[in-house]
Length: 427
Image (cartoon, rainbow, N blue to C red; front, side):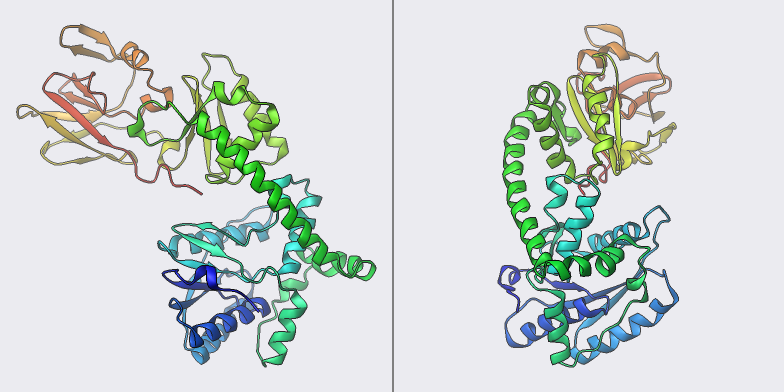
């Protein structure tokens, strides 16, 4: 019924097991394969959203099924953030939990099928999605340190139900699935039956259209990769490990090609904005040369500085502050929300502290005398958003060194900065 060959080299197989029809069928298929063939270890994950009283009994049901099959089950409790779309919020909480759990080489199987693909295409079409959205859900994609796989996408809901009935499987019927206040339930319960009475192959044909659009998206991604390979060159200050693109290279492309490249680049970092919010890109791109525009997105922001656009997320969205005494310069000094620093000096130093720019700082440089720090940073073309984060080393009130900029330090004193490790997590 399914082909699991592409995932046989995985470290561990996980299955998102809700206890419903689809995931119950998938669990039994995976368990059967594991009994009869060499396979990675198989474990089940049940996410408890706490959204309805009936759900409190589902972990026990899932545990009973897993006990019968000899499969370990982990129940994960999540908090669903309030918002306009409960469906979307629950999905985000669920996948965030999966992402944290997966290790390198792990695979998470989910049970979306052909009818789900058709409903996704129709749902996104009604929302005015572009090719990236209309391509539907992919059979596989990266997730955290592992990957996500959907081996049932070629199977219909009816095929899964027939399999479950033929094998005497028991599953949970989620009461919320019949609540047509939810958009997907309305499509599934009210719209798709009407379409299939008139066009019996509607779901199959829509799923096929999603496949064609997925192929078109693949070609667009190849164009984006070629454009980004050029735009990504020449990034200054590689020790920041920040992703950036050359603005002039992007603006030389047609507007449609600009959006295509940015959609591909941003899709690994954040939830993509809808069409209405792409005005933020135009504002960022077309701002005055001396401006410092930013485009705020769901999981971070794009900023512009010195002819490049930069992606900032995690700790980079919050400016550090404070004055931090350094009692033991022989050890690293942790900076709240800003990584850590260590000192390299030709002689022992005392009365040290680390602080951040307030304005008006002056640094005395060998052979150059006293120089205004702002001008020195301008000379080095340090991006404006980085300047407020740069740790400054002081002895008393005298500025000794600027982190990671060897030219901005006393001759025998260097300050090495380890940047925040969560700053560049990709989505």
